[in-house]
Length: 548
Figure 1 (cartoon, rainbow, N blue to C red):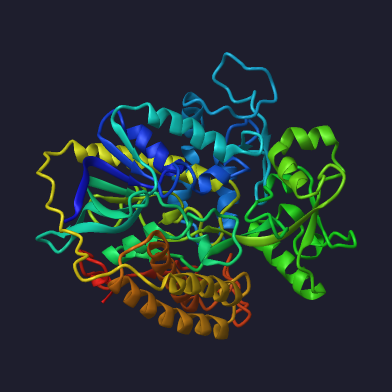
Figure 2 (cartoon, rainbow, N blue to C red):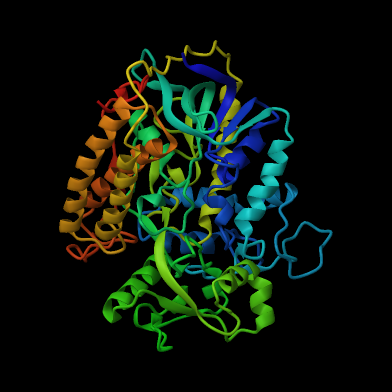
C-alpha cells in the first residue's frame, strides 16, 4: 500500500531560489509542502556566484536591459516575456532585501529607498553595470536567507531527501488533465510515498548532469522536465544548452565555477603562452555573450591541442580581487592557484538549459493546476542563449506571478482531494545488478558530451539518438522490473531529457545561439522556437507502466 504522506494546498518540487520564493510568497495564504532531493537548498541556485541582473541605476534603463537580453537570445526571445521579467526586476530585488539578503554595498547604508548604496557589476552581454550581488556567493546568500524564513513558517512542511518520481493526474470530461499530486521516493527510508495536492509546482532546475563535464551539482538531472513530459506537457527549445566558458580546470575541482564577473571586472582569457585571443572572435572580447566565449575557448583548445586555457585577473590589485571574489580566491588557493599573482586554468562546462516545460507568464503548463518555474521552464525569456545573471531574475519574477495565480485558483470553491492510485510494487524485486545503472549513467554522459556538445554535426546527433534509443529501452526494462532507487529515478529522467535535447537539435537545421552545427553554419531568415509535443500519456500508477 502507498503511504499518503501529506495532503496540501500547494506541493512545490524543488527548493532552490524559485521553489523557496514561491513557498514564501504563498505561505501566508495556503498550506505548502516543499520537497528537496537532498539537504534543502543544495540545488544549482546555491552555487550561483555572479548575481541578479536588474535595472537599479539611474544610468540604466528597462529598454537597455531588454535590448541586451534580446541580443543575447539571438532572435528567439519572446519580447513580451522579456519586458514582463525585466520590468519586475527592481521590485523583486527590493523583496529579497526585505527577506534579509545582504547584497554587497559600495556606500554606507542609506535611509531612503534608492539602490545607490549597492555595488553593481557588469557581465558578458550587458551594456551597463546592472548585476547586484553578494560578493561572489549571491546564490548562497539568497537561498540561506529564504530557507531561514521558510523554516520558521508554521504553514510550510519541509521534506528533505525526497525525490519526485512522477506526477499524479486525473482526466477531465473535456479531455484535459489536472495535477492532483506526485509520487515521491523517501531517500532516508527507501520507500515510495504519495502527496495529494490541489496544485503542484515544479521548480526542479536544469539537466546539465546529462553531460560529463558540468558546473552544476549532482541534483541537476532534469527531473521536472521528464515528469512533465511523461504527464503530457510540451517542452520547448531543449537544444539550447549553455556551456559556461570558465570552470576551474583541476582533476579534483569537480564543478567549481569561475564567475563571469571576473571577466566583467577585467579578467582576460589567454593561451598558455600569455597571448589573449578573444579579439579574434568578437569585438566585445571577454564581454561577448557566453555562447561566443565558450566556442572561442573550445576552438582554441582544439586548434592548439590544449586541455584548458587561462583566465587572468592578476593585473588588478590584490585588495580589489580579494574584496570582490573572496570565495573564488579561497577555492583556487586550495588547489594551488593564487589568483592575485597568477592566472586561473579554465575550461567550458555544461551550465544552463535555456529550454524546458512550456509555460505562460503565470507559470501555467499544459496540465491544469501544474506550474513550472525557474530553469525547468520555457517562457521564451532566454531565447537561444541566456544573458548572464538573468536566471535568478527569472526565478524571482515567475515565482511572484505563479504565486498570484495559485492564490486565485485556491480561492475558488474546493472539492475533495482526488483519490490517489496505489504505487504497485507487487511484481518487482530488489535489484541485484546496480552496476547496470552506474554503467548506463556513465555511458549516457560521455556520448552526450562527445556528440551533443558545444559544436555539433548531423552525424554526431544521429549517433547520439541511436545510443539513447538503446539505453532508454534498457533503462525502462530495468525500471519495470526492480524497485526504484534514487540513481534509477535520476537515470530514467536523464535519458528522457537527453532524447528531448537530441530530438530538438536534429530539428534545428541552422546555427543560432547555443546551437552551433558544422553542417548548418548559416542562420535562417526566420527564427522559430522548437516545440515538442508528447503523445497522450499513460498514468504512471506503478513502476514501468508509464514507459510501456
